[in-house]
Length: 414
Ligand code: HEM
Image (cartoon, rainbow, N blue to C red; front, side):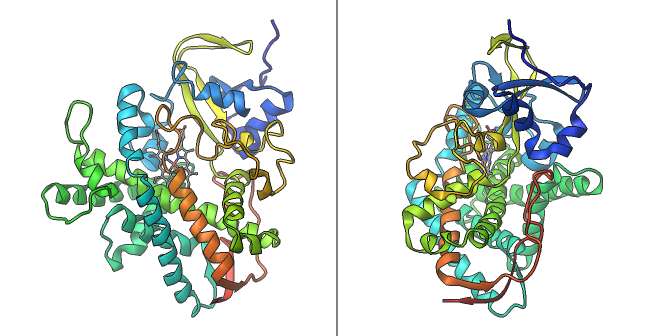
């Protein structure tokens, strides 16, 4: 049988950090394949890329998540024992809880809230000498997220909460003091939300049904038991934290409006184009590099022998740039989405497959709402100068971001 190629070096952990977003595509796609073997931290790891690779990765008969996530990621980014680590029926039940928050009314409400906060913030920016969009939108989104989730936020705690949520997002990839700060940020945030969950259960907070705080506080597991208050807090943070993380796509989108100025009038005036632009921002720019899963039992796929408990990575960035799926993948072209058929395994910036059966991000619709409201506001109502700065971004550094955070000057509203 044909041999699947593999890295000959003993360990590629350092090279993985050096190659960043291009580590997997450089290996898998350059061999015109869907699978490739490397060694990371002394283990044989299977790298998957492309539509077929993604389909295998999301086959829950062959892959599971239990144990696929390193402790350092759970102690910062995700929280321990949360939905990301669950499998089977327990996962499906927990997933329904998240999906139940995404009604058309709730999504419409999120879009309106986002626009309202943009109006507020743009008003404030008019008096500012310089505006760093990434910093400002993190706070804008922290306020939007808490408002949407039913989480009360005192004016004086806004900066601290915003900072802690950001630290949780970025700290998992850091080492040393930054990683420790990230763990502390998670502990503080969990405590904050846990207290709110307890208050809701004691009837001390007046809340609307359907908000994330209400639903997390009242959810019952498959045995009919309420979630432990800390667990409910962790899952509520799984809603608020990623809403703040949308600031990354937002900042990349501002770069797109600047680097491809022909898109701006169309983003302002045409709702279909606005949607296609938003999809292209999610496809084109580097955010999530790859995701991990574990093999359930031995099996062979495309001549490669997967072994029980082996770690498998799906190439998220590379699949979004796979030339077998996307024509001129490295060109920013919103029009490509005019005749996109909406495959489950081709556009995977927030994971692929089925929402209910697998781990695909339940926040994909909220992300699209927030981004569309934001890009529409920017293109229609915001006038600004973009002073000389370095807003380039690196494919080597994970997570990536425009270096300057996107600086604007002389902001006015029209
Ligand atoms: C899962 C990305 C926004 C909630 C995921 C996954 C990715 C992702 C890659 C993992 C998919 C997998 O493991 O197969 C993103 C990105 C976002 C975003 C890039 C934009 C900034 C959101 C939002 C929410 C959210 C706004 C909530 C409102 C979740 C949850 C999971 C998840 C709860 C775990 C789902 C599961 O394990 O079944 N997201 N997400 N995300 N996301 Fe998002």
